[in-house]
Image (cartoon, rainbow, N blue to C red; front, side):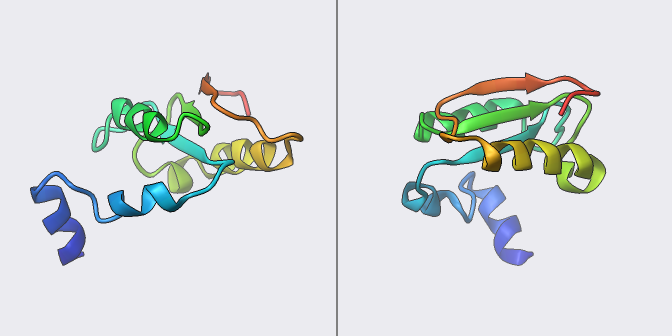
Amino acid sequence: TDKAMASTADGKDALDDRLTGLQAPLLIVWGADDKILPVTDAIKLHQLDPRSNVDILEGCGHLGPKTCAERVANVTADFLKSQPANSGKVRGVPVGQR
């Protein structure tokens, strides 16, 4: 917790240096209503690896895996099942849609 708090104070997340080591396919799932980290941060992550895919879940906030668990699981499962893997897409996922 201390490390995470310190990283927010200097504007650099503790995981920033690990992003370049990730391999495609990469899925970024973000809550459209995130009040802690805005959707623009998801787009910035996507720009670091344009092959990544971004699903922005309407009606979900910062803790999407907890508060929107079924929707997060559904978009993740859809991504993992896609053949060939999706690459470079950004999409909004409305409430009520997988």
